[in-house]
Image (cartoon, rainbow, N blue to C red; front, side, top):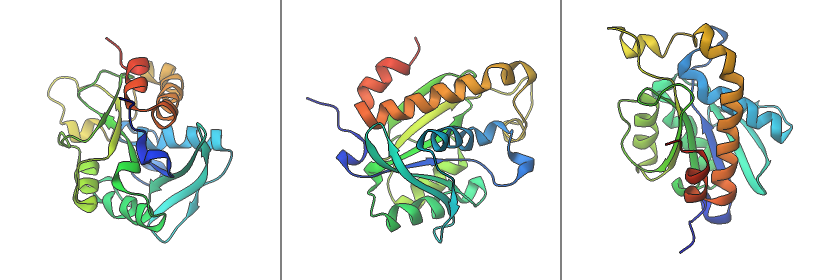
Length: 197
């Protein structure tokens, strides 16, 4: 049995999660935006505002037609813009790939899956509620757990550490590679290549 590709050969929506505004740009919570910026560079275009409430860019990646989306809402309200973009382009939930930060993975670790819970991630909770299903793809970028007793909500709104920033560009690049593998080769092949250990 061959692994079904996101979107089953049709156009794919790649949504990166983050908070809008320069004060959030370097936050752990914004790693989804960082990966989308790298993918936009590969497509060779610029994001433009759209009535869906997201910044969008159409192009091709891994031989597929894609729409890149960065919601202009805050993280907790990501669902509206993501679903707005999906509806505008007539993309089913099975063609939606969400790139987001993950506290339960060490920094730089990548995991991909189809469906599942939101694990306390408010952006995913909003998207699941707006889509009406959990059955969309997730690319999870590890940001690690907060040190000591720091509140996870505060931790994800802080910039990556000095040590992490030394390899952040490389890890973001690798995550963009993983997204391309997912949409080009399917979930199983991408997992086999990018899941460590």
